[in-house]
Length: 580
Image (tube, rainbow, N blue to C red; front, side, top):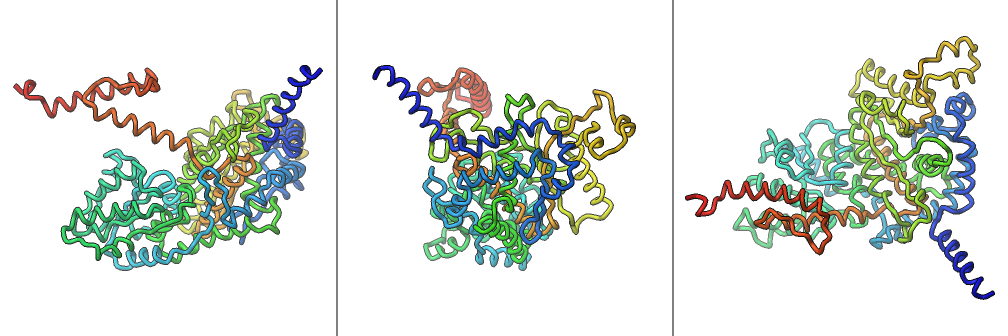
């Protein structure tokens, strides 16, 4: 009957709608999920015993700047073919083309993503070279937070030559400011205020502190800005000059303009290493020549990724992104009966790359931590929301902290191991020791200390039995990882490494159908913080509930803080009755 058909038609309509909203329910996803069932039970020791397979699971990056080996991932040639098919069905090549041609790829803000333009900035380079050549400046303090600090500081620490003492300031705490300025002569210190919007509260607070720290006589010369919002940056620099110099007039507007190094609003903060927030500190740290080499390394990766003639399987960022999706979305399924794969460790075996985990953490988690599709629709299943929790630290330090969990914990945590084949700053003995751990940890995670691999290598049973250990000492292995080797710790290779992770992030977003270029969750937290901040000015110990929206727990905790503030205020500024 007509009445009986209506509920069924509604059910079919909803089902079709859900399938349309979820870009995951296509042939490639289904094949990958079916393939994952058979792959889950195959130990990595068995896979690594196949030499021919291992030879296929590696890729030389553009111009030999880096080399990727993923033989310690639970994949076969069939897996990689299915992942490439997924990339095609997810329209990754078409989306990369849109990004390359500066079309809209950030629908939330109706913007392109132009960080890959990697433009030479002659004004930045000339300014930095002039500062380095004159010798009047001995130190640099960069005030910025998030993308205005993490990526730029990573590049500086990886390559700095020590001519200038370059420090970064992000926290608003007095102790952080004191640490950033300790021992510095403000007359010989260049201050850089780095902020895309120039309205970020933390940066504004630190900018005001640094402005007051600089002597009036050098404020104009020693205070510069990197900003996309040039008007706000100009207001800040104008107020700095006018408040400290009564003779300031409009004729000095050109001077103010020269101290602003703009970048496009289409460049996200976490992608701004190759824009003025990253290039100015780097050029001050190493000079313009090496900074251009850094950009050249990034462009090598860009050219490979954006080349329509190069298949996806020959692009290092795609391989990394696809393997991440494979681990998180396909092998990470409760019905497979194994531990969940919902985190990834980034472990650089290089002291100068110690900040790589923090940069990748922000890059990926701020870009991919989304719960809706790129066009704002709900995902069909909770499993489609899974993205990596990224953490890490430099080896070998982290071998003495969280590696115990990696080897014997219930959760399986894939790793990115990163190292440089050559580093001019290291002596051979120390480098050998470091690299021995780099290779050993990847193998231990993959093979453990059981006999799976050794049986496959046709050792005698007696030899294999000798390798058996107690349950307490048993390392199960079967923990996946990738090894990423830089040709050398030089500007080109470091630039290539950072570009690889930028593209990996964007491609993962394309595969999962999320917008990797917005961050709405971050913005709401800032709004709420401003509302709470207003309570601090009230002469009361009671935190007012705004429209019943503030939880009791928050009001009680906030009340304790406000009570302490009020007590301090009364102690230092007693009323007339209290003073008697």
